[in-house]
Amino acid sequence: MFYWLAHYKSVFFALNVLTYITFRAGGAILTSLLLTWYFGPRFIDYIKRKSVTQSIRKDGPKTHLEKEGTPTMGGLLILITTVLSTLLWTRLDNRFIWLSLITVVYLGFIGFIDDYRKWRGLGGHSKGLSPSLKMAALMILSIGVVTYLQLYPPNAEYATRVGIPYSKSIFIDFGMLYSVFAIFIIAGSSNAVNLTDGLDGLAIGSLIISSVTYALFAYLAGNARFSGYLRIVPVAGAGELAVFLAAIVGSGLGFLWYNCYPAQIFMGDTGSLFLGGALGLIAV
Image 1 (tube, rainbow, N blue to C red):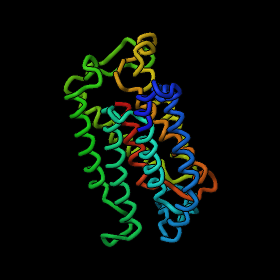
Image 2: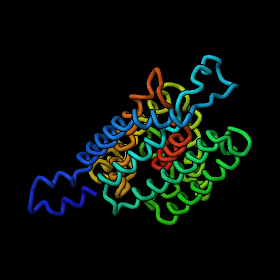
Image 3: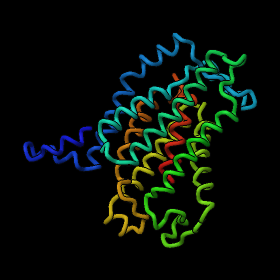
Image 4: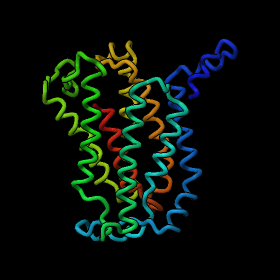
């Protein structure tokens, strides 16, 4: 949204900074960080009053059982601040941004329904959505996203090819199997973060590191000069994903303030599903 102010740089030259991805990424980090940090205590108090608490799997280490009763559903705070910051600082004419926003809102909604059912004990139990139903929802999204990217590939030359890490020039052409591989990446990433959540700072700390790394790759891939020099697959428009990921990093840092030891709140499925799905989508 702020990007459009750059159209008036002829009136006020300082607005030209809004054309720079690095500047807007910095703005996205600060915006989401401050929003999460400011509204965190109010959100935690509200969740406590509603008694929305974390359930711990009994098949895990016994030392983890002490986390039982910690407020959860903190992913809702991460989701809202990420979406708001993204809308403020990215170019809204970029298709990758809208694909990312649709993905995170969809998965955030699925995660919210799961957490809500756990809280209310709907269906006669407090386990939330069944694994099969949750996986079906993930597969619907993954298939839809991968189908779109196959019809309108980010880079048609590499539409079905996967690079070997550290080789730069060796690619494996998956052909028709690429769609299956990409679906596995998105659904698997979403589940990976979901399984990681439950310990102080573990999931969000790992995700911040991953997001910073992917933000760097997205920025380099979206820059024709850098991608050519570093022999990274060029993807026109991918630079805007660095701003989106910066918003996630800012929200994650703000959330980590309340999630580090001793954790005052956990993200729950509301956060873990959409955060993992976002990483998988951007990887693809």
